[in-house]
Length: 194
Image (cartoon, rainbow, N blue to C red; front, side, top):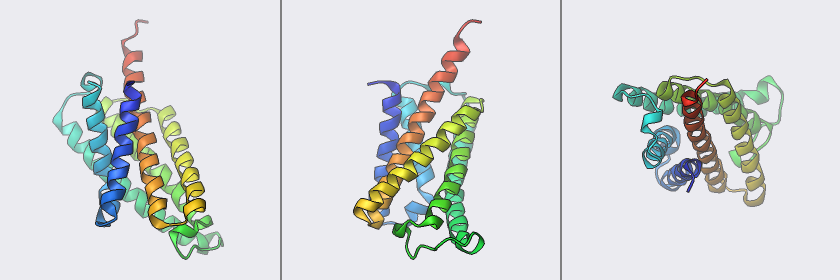
Protein backbone atom coordinates (compact mmCIF):
# COMPACT_ATOMS: atom_id res chain seq x y z
CA UNK A 1 0.00 0.00 0.00
CA UNK A 2 1.44 3.38 -0.93
CA UNK A 3 2.21 5.92 1.74
CA UNK A 4 -0.40 8.37 0.51
CA UNK A 5 -3.12 5.70 0.70
CA UNK A 6 -2.19 5.09 4.34
CA UNK A 7 -2.70 8.79 5.05
CA UNK A 8 -5.98 8.80 3.09
CA UNK A 9 -7.35 5.77 4.97
CA UNK A 10 -6.24 7.16 8.34
CA UNK A 11 -8.13 10.39 7.64
CA UNK A 12 -11.17 8.46 6.41
CA UNK A 13 -11.19 6.36 9.57
CA UNK A 14 -10.90 9.48 11.75
CA UNK A 15 -13.90 11.00 9.96
CA UNK A 16 -15.96 7.82 10.29
CA UNK A 17 -15.13 7.56 14.01
CA UNK A 18 -16.05 11.21 14.50
CA UNK A 19 -19.45 10.70 12.91
CA UNK A 20 -20.11 7.35 14.60
CA UNK A 21 -19.26 8.63 18.08
CA UNK A 22 -20.70 12.08 17.37
CA UNK A 23 -24.15 10.55 16.86
CA UNK A 24 -24.30 9.77 20.59
CA UNK A 25 -21.90 12.46 21.82
CA UNK A 26 -22.53 15.66 19.81
CA UNK A 27 -19.78 17.53 21.69
CA UNK A 28 -17.30 15.47 19.69
CA UNK A 29 -18.56 17.15 16.52
CA UNK A 30 -17.65 20.54 17.98
CA UNK A 31 -14.31 19.89 19.65
CA UNK A 32 -13.27 16.38 18.66
CA UNK A 33 -12.74 16.72 14.92
CA UNK A 34 -9.35 18.41 15.25
CA UNK A 35 -7.86 16.00 17.81
CA UNK A 36 -9.11 12.96 15.88
CA UNK A 37 -7.71 14.34 12.63
CA UNK A 38 -4.37 15.02 14.31
CA UNK A 39 -4.37 11.51 15.80
CA UNK A 40 -4.98 10.09 12.32
CA UNK A 41 -2.12 12.18 10.99
CA UNK A 42 0.24 10.90 13.70
CA UNK A 43 -0.91 7.31 13.15
CA UNK A 44 -0.24 7.63 9.42
CA UNK A 45 3.19 9.15 10.09
CA UNK A 46 3.95 6.18 12.35
CA UNK A 47 2.59 3.56 9.92
CA UNK A 48 4.59 4.99 7.01
CA UNK A 49 7.69 5.51 9.13
CA UNK A 50 7.71 9.21 8.27
CA UNK A 51 9.21 10.41 11.56
CA UNK A 52 12.44 11.40 9.85
CA UNK A 53 10.47 13.67 7.52
CA UNK A 54 9.05 15.82 10.32
CA UNK A 55 11.05 17.92 12.72
CA UNK A 56 11.81 16.48 16.16
CA UNK A 57 10.57 17.93 19.41
CA UNK A 58 7.61 16.86 21.52
CA UNK A 59 6.61 20.50 21.87
CA UNK A 60 5.92 20.60 18.11
CA UNK A 61 3.37 17.82 18.44
CA UNK A 62 1.70 19.47 21.42
CA UNK A 63 1.49 22.84 19.65
CA UNK A 64 0.35 21.20 16.40
CA UNK A 65 -2.38 19.26 18.25
CA UNK A 66 -3.60 22.49 19.88
CA UNK A 67 -3.54 24.36 16.56
CA UNK A 68 -5.39 21.50 14.85
CA UNK A 69 -8.05 21.49 17.56
CA UNK A 70 -8.38 25.26 17.49
CA UNK A 71 -8.52 25.38 13.70
CA UNK A 72 -11.48 23.04 13.51
CA UNK A 73 -13.31 24.81 16.33
CA UNK A 74 -12.64 28.11 14.54
CA UNK A 75 -13.83 26.59 11.24
CA UNK A 76 -17.08 25.52 12.92
CA UNK A 77 -17.48 28.99 14.43
CA UNK A 78 -16.77 30.55 11.02
CA UNK A 79 -19.40 28.32 9.42
CA UNK A 80 -21.96 29.36 12.03
CA UNK A 81 -21.25 33.08 11.88
CA UNK A 82 -20.79 33.44 8.11
CA UNK A 83 -23.66 31.10 7.30
CA UNK A 84 -25.90 32.74 9.90
CA UNK A 85 -25.29 36.31 8.80
CA UNK A 86 -25.10 35.69 5.05
CA UNK A 87 -28.88 35.83 4.74
CA UNK A 88 -28.93 39.25 6.43
CA UNK A 89 -25.81 40.70 4.82
CA UNK A 90 -26.10 39.22 1.33
CA UNK A 91 -29.84 38.78 1.24
CA UNK A 92 -29.63 35.06 0.44
CA UNK A 93 -32.43 32.72 1.42
CA UNK A 94 -31.81 31.19 4.84
CA UNK A 95 -31.87 27.46 5.50
CA UNK A 96 -34.20 26.30 8.24
CA UNK A 97 -31.92 23.32 8.77
CA UNK A 98 -28.40 22.50 7.63
CA UNK A 99 -29.74 19.73 5.37
CA UNK A 100 -31.74 22.31 3.40
CA UNK A 101 -28.30 23.27 2.00
CA UNK A 102 -29.25 26.66 0.62
CA UNK A 103 -26.85 29.48 -0.20
CA UNK A 104 -26.19 30.28 3.46
CA UNK A 105 -24.90 26.75 4.08
CA UNK A 106 -22.76 26.89 0.94
CA UNK A 107 -21.26 30.24 1.95
CA UNK A 108 -20.69 29.12 5.54
CA UNK A 109 -19.05 25.85 4.50
CA UNK A 110 -16.81 27.54 1.95
CA UNK A 111 -15.69 30.07 4.57
CA UNK A 112 -15.02 27.20 6.99
CA UNK A 113 -12.97 25.45 4.28
CA UNK A 114 -10.65 28.46 4.10
CA UNK A 115 -10.14 28.46 7.86
CA UNK A 116 -9.64 24.68 8.07
CA UNK A 117 -7.20 24.72 5.13
CA UNK A 118 -5.09 27.46 6.70
CA UNK A 119 -5.17 25.65 10.04
CA UNK A 120 -4.03 22.34 8.56
CA UNK A 121 -1.28 24.10 6.59
CA UNK A 122 -0.14 25.75 9.84
CA UNK A 123 -0.06 22.33 11.53
CA UNK A 124 2.13 21.00 8.74
CA UNK A 125 4.35 24.08 8.96
CA UNK A 126 4.84 23.40 12.68
CA UNK A 127 5.70 19.75 12.00
CA UNK A 128 7.99 20.27 9.01
CA UNK A 129 9.14 23.88 9.26
CA UNK A 130 7.95 24.57 5.71
CA UNK A 131 4.94 26.63 4.69
CA UNK A 132 3.51 25.73 1.29
CA UNK A 133 1.14 28.06 -0.53
CA UNK A 134 0.57 25.35 -3.15
CA UNK A 135 -0.55 22.91 -0.44
CA UNK A 136 -2.83 25.58 0.98
CA UNK A 137 -4.40 25.93 -2.45
CA UNK A 138 -4.75 22.12 -2.80
CA UNK A 139 -6.30 21.87 0.67
CA UNK A 140 -8.79 24.59 -0.25
CA UNK A 141 -9.64 22.79 -3.50
CA UNK A 142 -10.09 19.53 -1.58
CA UNK A 143 -12.40 21.34 0.82
CA UNK A 144 -14.49 22.67 -2.06
CA UNK A 145 -14.68 19.15 -3.54
CA UNK A 146 -15.77 17.87 -0.12
CA UNK A 147 -18.56 20.46 0.06
CA UNK A 148 -19.68 19.55 -3.46
CA UNK A 149 -19.71 15.80 -2.68
CA UNK A 150 -21.62 16.52 0.54
CA UNK A 151 -24.15 18.60 -1.40
CA UNK A 152 -24.71 15.77 -3.90
CA UNK A 153 -25.06 13.17 -1.12
CA UNK A 154 -27.41 15.49 0.74
CA UNK A 155 -29.62 15.72 -2.36
CA UNK A 156 -29.87 11.93 -2.42
CA UNK A 157 -30.37 11.19 1.30
CA UNK A 158 -31.41 14.56 2.83
CA UNK A 159 -30.59 13.55 6.40
CA UNK A 160 -28.38 15.18 9.02
CA UNK A 161 -26.24 12.10 9.61
CA UNK A 162 -25.73 11.42 5.93
CA UNK A 163 -24.66 15.08 5.61
CA UNK A 164 -22.13 14.72 8.43
CA UNK A 165 -21.32 11.16 7.35
CA UNK A 166 -20.04 12.48 4.03
CA UNK A 167 -18.61 15.85 5.05
CA UNK A 168 -16.28 14.71 7.82
CA UNK A 169 -14.90 11.42 6.42
CA UNK A 170 -14.36 12.81 2.91
CA UNK A 171 -12.85 16.05 4.22
CA UNK A 172 -10.58 14.32 6.73
CA UNK A 173 -9.49 11.73 4.16
CA UNK A 174 -8.61 14.31 1.50
CA UNK A 175 -6.85 16.63 3.93
CA UNK A 176 -4.84 13.83 5.53
CA UNK A 177 -3.91 12.45 2.09
CA UNK A 178 -2.68 15.85 0.91
CA UNK A 179 -0.68 16.41 4.10
CA UNK A 180 0.94 12.98 3.78
CA UNK A 181 1.82 13.59 0.15
CA UNK A 182 3.32 16.97 1.08
CA UNK A 183 5.40 15.47 3.90
CA UNK A 184 6.98 13.04 1.47
CA UNK A 185 7.20 15.48 -1.44
CA UNK A 186 8.92 18.26 0.48
CA UNK A 187 11.39 15.95 2.22
CA UNK A 188 12.29 14.17 -1.04
CA UNK A 189 12.79 17.52 -2.76
CA UNK A 190 15.04 18.67 0.08
CA UNK A 191 17.21 15.54 -0.21
CA UNK A 192 17.75 15.91 -3.98
CA UNK A 193 21.19 17.26 -4.93
CA UNK A 194 21.26 20.58 -6.71
